[in-house]
Length: 72
Image (cartoon, rainbow, N blue to C red; front, side, top):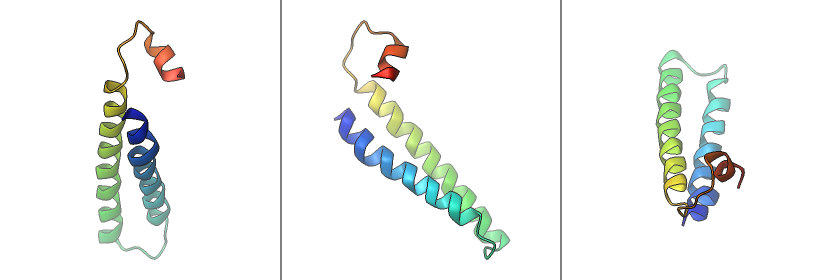
């Protein structure tokens, strides 16, 4: 399940953040649109953080160190 969240949801959220970053750099956006993109980026960042936390919490309990889990 953790792999599915990481390989699906988390990657899609990351792609959405990259897309909003590109959109934010557009010279054609007005002030309101830039603010909206900023809010959207914040929403996506919070969702990505939750997805990452879910991945970590769904990992099997082992005696492995945190650094070992991150490496794996």
